[in-house]
Length: 618
Image (spheres, rainbow, N blue to C red):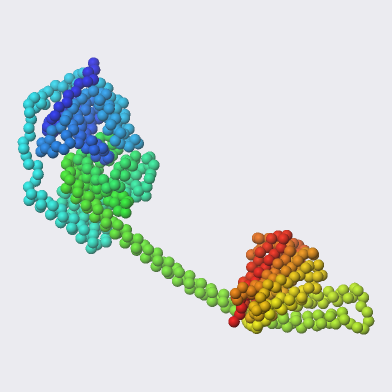
């Protein structure tokens, strides 16, 4: 037979009576033989709670046979030495389910606590009459005499004497000063930890004090809720040998779905747990871990620096519950802050040592590479000098050996073409003309090679004189009229020179060579019926020569190769245009020898424009 679902009462009770009711409910939970859940307000220690929950105390019992909720609220603004609580006791399953839902929603939806509370809420049933009656009799037996009369607690002054408070504060400040002094005079982190933890454990009369280090790669990142988050104890100090050690113990099984807890620690939250049996009643894994580690009560302060959660400073009471005071909480937080400073100093020192070692190693490596590179450059320089000497000797020899017979070939073929005695047949005349032209071309090639080698060797000296730009342009165009006319190309001269600025200082021979190379190149690559124009003008102290043609043009991809030695952009099996690729390379060298520059703009099938800037020479 089930009991009525609306049994309840509500009245103001002194705190002592409220606590007795809570103890009575916990005794009743032991009487129930089935699985039972007992929760107090201690379970909220690890979560952020709204202000209205901060003044509430409760004892909650849930089982299939018997469930009850004792809820007490202290009136806001009242600070009595023996406070009274606005108390309600209910056995109504719907009211209890509503309260369980409110507690459940304070926890993260993925947490074990949230899931367990939801499971117990769904298991709520009306109380069995026999057990309900047993509790009612127990309630009457223990508390009815006290509820029927006005209960007052002895007026006891809870505040310690002023002398004791001042003495305790002086001891606390002395302890902090010792720790701070140790940090300032020592950068050895193990020594600092050993000294600080030993002093704090003795001062607070703790069973055990540990420093716990997180796996920062996980804790300080936004992990998914299902990932395991843990760490290990890096230092501990115990009151006696009988207390088991947790040094170097790693925990990677229970810290799941606790993102809210880590976030609270990162914000500076200090965890106060007076009794782990009550606080972790729904965290079976964590509760078993604490039992195995001999932890009954704990006080936890975060160690934070540079907005990163490094670890925790944890005080343990191993055998009995402990009511942690605000002074103890404040002291542990201050020590954690000092340890954070020490850890930061140690990491900076380690980073500096690592940087120093790295720089030393890099310096040694760099010195070795410099030595190796210097030796390689010296060997390369010697090889280059030897190669340069060999090249100069070769060019000097070949120029003498080639130019002398080549001069005879050109001279004699020219003489035979003008031979007055006897008539030459057309075939003979053609052969002689071919010999003569080939000799001229070979002579031009040899002269270009010699010029280029002399410039690259730094042996070319400009012969600076004053000359007429107009006359130089005219002579360059006139010297090529015949060649242009043979291809039916219109060769033009466009002078845009003020007569007063016609006189110019440079190496006139080299300027003429530049113009001749560019004009012959334009004529060579311009088809019949096209045109080639030479423009000359002066800007400031710079003479500008521009050769524009209506030739075949140059593809954009080949423009970077244009001024390279021995580069012919016409790469077909049988090139349609003769040449060695030295003309433009030599031209660029001669322009730069004058501290000038040369640029080209070209469009395929439309033509090209070469522009040369030559500053006046001193």
